[in-house]
Image (cartoon, rainbow, N blue to C red; front, side):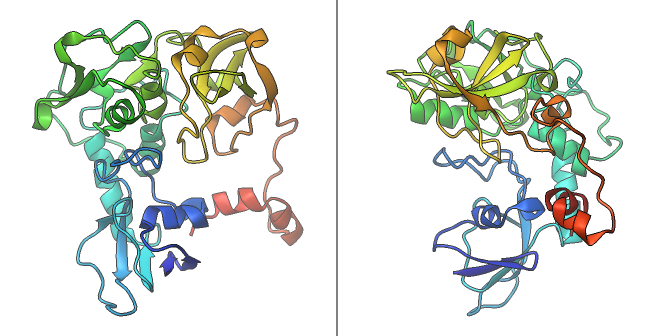
Length: 330
């Protein structure tokens, strides 16, 4: 099937969603996604940040869809035409969605361990309003202890359900879920049981905000001052392929390897995540490649010199194509 997104055409398999079709093209036309996770069945359709405009339904039925649709849940049709960043309506709707997500979200960035890796932080910078129109008290929750490895900050949660799907699909038992309804909905454990199984730490990796953080890494370092290194080990529980985060010679955090969209490539066990934080425990593969658009690249050791400034010279534009495409949006 052929689908056109922001003027760029791509051929995809039947059943492909608009979001995954955009990911095959790549670049800035890929809609943001806070709840969709390709490794988790049933994810998507919760946050509404991936809204797009279908200006042409298909070759057989060229009528546009009357409302904006969630790209993570809408499958493509042959001849479909979609507008993302080229539609002012989509940009305005996404701005409203971000404002809604930030209504009850506290300004914890100065102390939040997710800062620098937070998708909501990126969305707030790109689409957020300078001031909030919300004048009422923000919702509050009683703090509960869900274990010795994972810290829960319910005030930061955007109810993306990723951690619930992760516990459902890769662990033997799920002890936490969504309690209550509406504005009182919250992530919690049943009868305050501890979330403790061999793969429970993966809920930290899938959380797009700072609602679930690593207690062993808590308040130790800002992520842009660390150095990520790819490593692996022989593990009888998981793939053993991880990213080690160094501060000096010390491994201060271990996470699963993530792709360009912040999704874990392979889930790892708690032994690899929490119990093996020595260099001698791992086979080092080399530095992890960090996107130049990431805040982590500010102090990255793999960049030996500053990137040259893009000028009008065609030779420089070709030599710095990635930078040029990122700076000059459609």
